[in-house]
Every structure is written in structure tokens, then in C-alpha cells.
Image 1: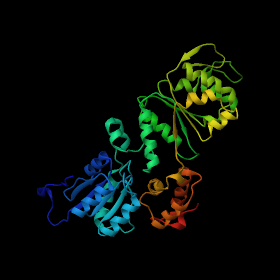
Image 2 (image 1 turned 135 degrees about the horizontal axis):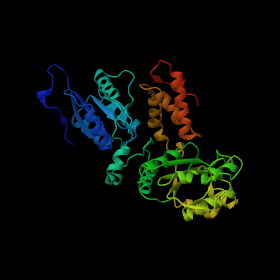
Image 3 (image 1 turned 120 degrees about the vertical axis):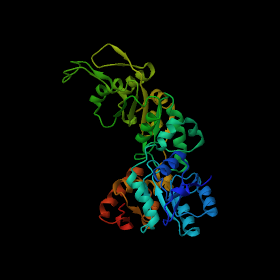
Image 4 (image 1 turned 30 degrees about the vertical axis):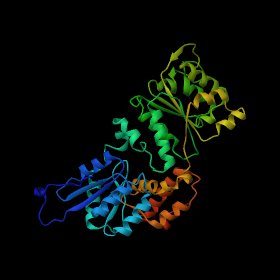
Length: 390
């Protein structure tokens, strides 16, 4: 790929040109970063993988690397080690793969890298994100391994999740998302809705475990005035409220057995009947369910209807626990630290502690750890082992 340079006539005499290498598999992200940093002082080169970046550096060293950690071929830690060993004068600045904002950099950045970081931070988040590019160019979905809106991680198992999610999002297929608590099932459900033709219509969430059994049926299906004590006026249910959009049934494994048959009837017929009424309403809703329970075991125990299970599990998506994608800890920790303490960096020693933990609470636990670390950080800029409380 050719180096994109500024015409010599625009360069100011006496100022050193800063050579910047943008490394990302997402060409939209590369283009947006380049556009925001346009100046007579920058010269740009782009690479779409770690191997491509190393090849370009061998041909021509640069001052600053802007690194998207979601590399398709190299772990970002491995990439940083290679750069430090082979190109010690090159500064690496890790950027958020969704916003383009700096995530982590060395504690004493070189002046040129500091200038690049300052311009990125001053410019605000990039608007044409990975999610936007995947919506506007469906062909790229098959050519590039991109993430999902709101999700961070480039491990192989997550790339598989991203791929099947993008494929099923375009259809009206019923989806069930399975995985341990804290793995991001709600984010996948939101991504399916955002990437679907229904994205401009309601996304309605109901947590089947959070609503008492006597109220859950009324919340789902609605009721008419006088249907029960306290029903002083008629009200549509959450299913009806999701008309044209998506209904997300979280913790479906906790739905009372008596209510499961009524939900099954809705899924098969597409009609709802409010409590106290004999009228049926036709509703156009795409259903996504999620659970951390083993529904097959629950069907064997007769606490979950087998016919409802098969009606929901038309397209199952299984989310891996964080311990099975430990290589994503760096990008996740950097993303959380940027959110809770902008400008902070995670030291190698702190990262080593995070990598050794088994994360029974998954991504939610890591988020809590990084939020605690940002509080303990105070006025410091480096997250060290003393700030990590597990």
C-alpha cells in the first residue's frame, strides 16, 4: 500500500514530519483516523494486519504506530514486544477499535506521539465506527472479521460469535443466546437488533427473573381495565409495545412453567390476548431470548417446556466465558480504563495479574475490577498491581 503523504508545498520549513502507521483490519477506521489527523506535518502509511505492519516498517521506519488491538493475525502484546525489540524508536499508541480514541501508551510518550494523541483526544470519538461500516457495506461482513456494536475482543471464539450474529441479524429468525452470567448476552441481543432491518423500531427488554410471577403475565401480555384488583385502566403489554421491533426475553429459564404455554402460543400464532379480554391482537415482533441456565437439563427436569425450548432455539448463539478468551483481557481492560479514567494506561505488571485470574464473573467482573482500579488510581496515570483488587 502506498504511503499517503502531504504535498511538499504545504509542509512548513523547519518542522520535522511525523510518520504515522495506522494498523487496523477495518479500512473505515483507518480512513477516519487519517482524516482527523490530516496536517502538513503528518505522513501516513496503512497496514491491515500485524504482518503487513512489520513488512512496512522493515521498508521504512515510522515515528508512531496507531494500533487497533483487534489484529487478525497477531496478539497485540506480541506485536508490542516485536516493535520494542526491532524498532525501539517507534512509539505505539493503542486506539479503541470502535471510537478511535487512544486506549494505552507508554508512561513517557515521545513528543511526537504525544502530539498525535493530543489531536486524537481533542477531536473526540470517531463517528464512522466498525458498526456503521458493517451496516453500510454488507459485502465487507464476509471479507473482514469485524466486531459488534458495544463489544470488545478479537479472539477466535469471539470472531465466530461476531460472524454468526451478523448473519442471523438480517433475518427474523428467533434467537436464543446462551452463556454464563456476565458474558455479554444483552450486548449480543442489542447488536442483533441494531444490525437488523428492525433497528428503527422498538427494542423492548423484559427480565423474566426480575418480575414477580403474578405480574409477569400482565407485563408481557397487558390487561384491560378491571382485569384484576388495581387494574384501573387498560394497558398494552411489552410484547405489543415491541410491535415492528424486537422483544428481548432475558433469563428465559426463570419464566414460570404456567406462563410458558402462553408464550409458546404467541410464538406460534403471532397473537396476544390481554388479561381480562377475549380479543386477539396480531403483533409483528422478532424474539430474542437469553439464559445462563442449561435449558436441556431444565426440560429433562420438567421445569421448562421442551416444545418452547425448540421453538426458541431456532438459532442458538453460545458466548464463551472470559477464561476461554483470556487474550481479550488487554483490549477489554484498556477499554474500561479509558471509560473510567481517561488517559490512564494499564502496566504490564497489572496486565499479568489480570491474565492469571480465572474470571468467574466474566466480563462484568473485569469491568468492576477496572472501575475499582480507576478509583484507587487517584491522580496517578498508570494502573499498577496495587490498584488491582480481585
